[in-house]
Image (cartoon, rainbow, N blue to C red; front, side, top):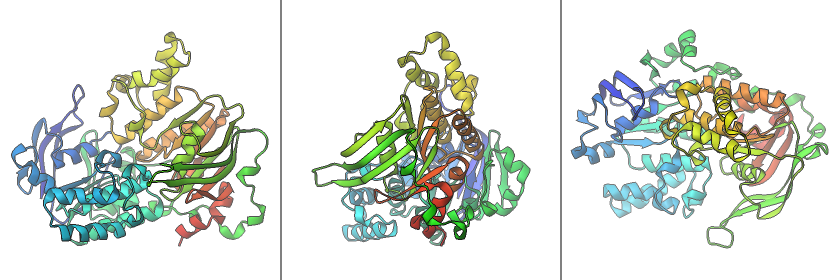
Length: 502
């Protein structure tokens, strides 16, 4: 059993993020933990794991204090934690050795270790990446590896911090099935999520807010408390899915009404295109044993003032294509043309990749100061950018970016990009990890950005977000353009998307 009594924790120089928290989690429970960004969900996970120590109060696992250094190995062995950012856990140079690393530390015999590794490679669809460097995997593939690396050690308690945020629908389903398998095997699961349909899979739901536990009970009963649930930041303005379930393309278009021959493909947009790619290819680690093709012969045009969504499975090439359009990565072959797109800015899939500085204000001001914005106007630029993403300037300007929650980091990273006032905005999974209120704010801002003539190119696995923002869609499959055109045409004609609807 996990028990927290009068648990209080604060990051240096900040007010308590958890204050006098009390809860108990029984053995064998599948607990879903929800709450707005910054409510302390990840902090609670780190306290249970023993990676943070309470300021006051206690937290125990089977009667053992997670803050007791003398039994840290025992706590680490009993509690497995899948982090929000999978890159934080990569320690070896191949997928196979990454899976074996934890088993080696536990002293698992070689024969058993090989069997467990082979089983995990198949179970998590990683077999073809056995000898691949984990740093070369896509974000979704890294998340699958992170989960596999923890579950292979068979912990008694499994904590998952928004594990599906970066996953495509098939990978999401497979991961949720794996969680159910773990529960069936007797593992106690704590699943941190922003998705109510995921919470419904659990047998107990706790919702945190700034005051602590604000809702606690059976998922269907908690989720039916609409007013209270929305007040906790768990509502999204564009929630088109039925019963809050994960949406598929068929939820948004009747495929019988679409004529594939009448598609207006993205490549046929007019000469006002601000960005054009001509036969672009990209190969990671070219001319090495680890060579991997990410994009093949991509030709596309993006019209000025349009909004285009990139979709496709994890590892299909979405992030690589965005980085090439942003000018961060040069193509291995082919050409890219920028016709009048003078200021391009990109927010990465993992916001930690681009955030620096001792305060959020110093991070946001860096770009504008280096592009000629007078210092006399910087205060206004910082405040405007923070307000745009729903972060109060007085509360967040002097915060250390690294003490923010995952969702707050994502919004803060976007604020740094917006401060540059780009005419083309490139976003990799911009709403992953955001609570519903955060999604609402980001989507509302991006709508205004488009209304003011901005050009938007973004990736997402969330069909609701695509529906809210995109005019056009591109589906990538193994580095190639599978389908592209107007959003609703693509939703009805893409073989990959159609397969998701069953």
